Amino acid sequence: MKKTILLAIAMIVIVFIGRVMPHPYNFTPVIAITLLSSHIFKNKYLSLSIPLLALWISDLFINNIVYAGYYSNFSFISNGMIWTYGSIILVGLIGNSIIKKVSSTKVALASISGSTIFYLISNFGVWFASPIYAKSLSGLFLCYSMALPFYGSSLAGDLTYSALFFGAYQLAISKSYNLNYSKSKI
Picture 1 (cartoon, rainbow, N blue to C red):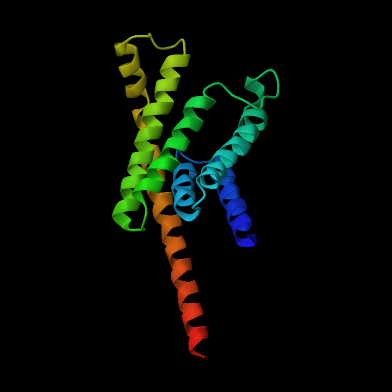
Picture 2: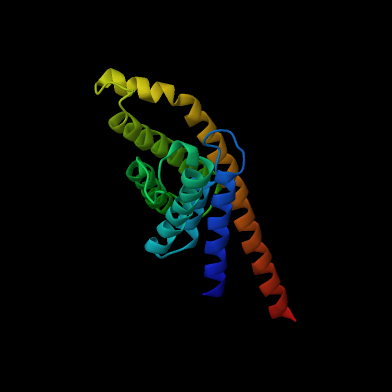
């Protein structure tokens, strides 16, 4: 139980730091942590709660401290949360179904799927809620085309962080296995 709590806290801290530190737009560890959490934690509520809590805590900081000058009052909820957080839930559920056993192909597929799901859902939310885009098919296509550079950056970040986190996780498991195996031989 103690390891589970420490791992959950570490994941939340990684997302917070990854979103707050300077980075290219959308090059964050959110999707990778969502996928890793959905693989590590068998309890679906826990596996989805960790990235959602991490996203919410970092949103609180970003929206109320970093961008405080753009808003008139402190907010626990932002416009568009339903689209962003909904896409993270979907990414976690899909990651859970794709990554039963870790392989580079499955992690890459889940990461690309996660990037694409986030792009499609979050930008649909932008089109739906924003007065900038016409509420027509051409307005939706314009919204998606304007977001393509963000999708590229998101895809690069998701693949990079997924490779890093799943690689580190597999290394930790193999080290733990080797350590336990060598102890049993003594």
